Image (cartoon, rainbow, N blue to C red; front, side, top):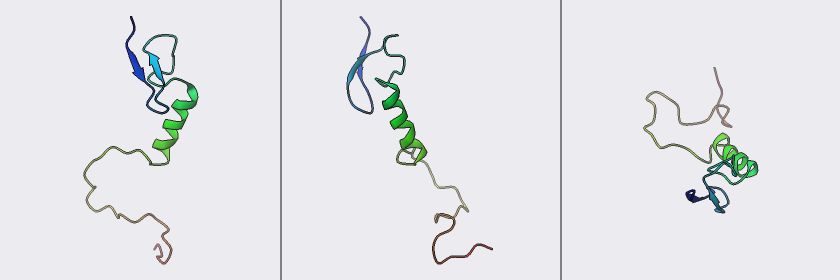
Length: 66
């Protein structure tokens, strides 16, 4: 019997088998939703800040770049 798990996006129960080629996601849609979360920086891996890196994003209103 194949292991059962939940899709990380929609929580649907699926089997770890060739029947679900997008595993651990249940579908391509859920896989793309997760990818969108990473690309829009909703998901992130915790880590230490890089020394010397400015925390404010470039182009912040009220600031001028040299």
